[in-house]
Image (cartoon, rainbow, N blue to C red; front, side, top):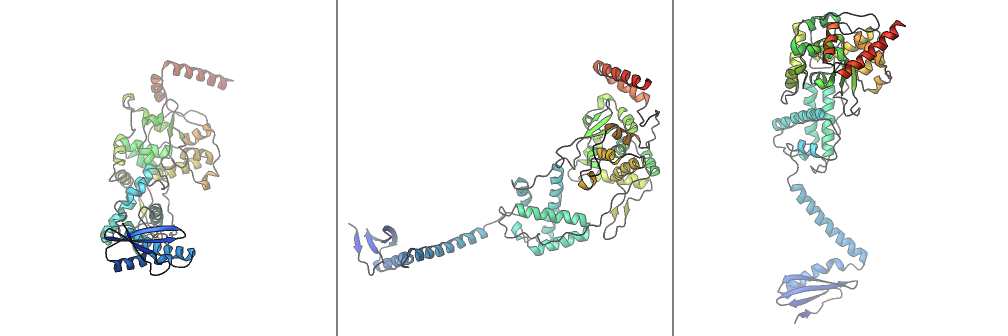
Length: 440
């Protein structure tokens, strides 16, 4: 039978002996609490009882709750200290955590590849300059400022801003995962941009460059000039993007793919480019139009640098300076590159009297500052903008009268051989209608 010890004072509770162990018992507002002291010595058990009942002797429910809350706060602080001491997300694993984070902004595949490269440079910098810091939360504001300072010495203001904006976003996304207490990048100010665009090339320069290349490089330069495409889009074009019968190219620009909801650009083929494309045997019109250059561009380690290097050598071999000094830059700026062909397309089209709407329809600008000038363009106007460009490839054609020039007779005859019966019937029908309209 359990033995009960007498209470020494009101509210002090009591001790109950069960076997050789004393149990503490006390009540609050009619609710009975029982807890073992784990002791067999009565005097020691009384001390434990007093410890148990101390929070409940405050005289009111409010005081009691305050005391319990204070003790819980101490326990929670201890738990937090324990959590803080546990290993957190490492710097090396941060990029994988970011790519898998459900709360990160959506970015295209090519954009994410660029981000991965930028974060890789940061991890390499950390290994060299702060090898003792292995966790993401260990990157302090001082470290962030040091890295930013090194960025400013090596890169342009535009590149500097891209790095800092990316890191600000990564730390924000991984705030909970990495148990971060602050974002070390948030106090970095953006640098004032000293912009420098690629210049357009003169007709003499274009003629010299196109005459100095052959094979895939010759076709790549023609695509850049006559379609106004960026390098990544031009070098990765597939035959499925080309319709030689309708004489047009269809492509979704990689840079604007996510922002423009996959808007497809319909670009008429200039007669010189059309002739080049028809030179390829029909059985080889599969996969990439420029398979060697596409493979070179897609190599993960170089990320297009090898193709850019080849293009730069072409310009330099023609005596064209590709770099220039830009005020405010510590490094030489790029003055001429593949993007110069895009500028040349716009410039030559404008000089030929093409409307801004027509140029916009070809190059696919998405900047609101530019698109406010570009309304919907009639397809015939777009064709005229492309056909009006000069032939700098050395391909001689027979030009017909009218606002636009057409592919030469040989190219047309080649296309006729490839048409099926239904397509030929449709062509004959349209030809008769066109002849009737012109003879009226």
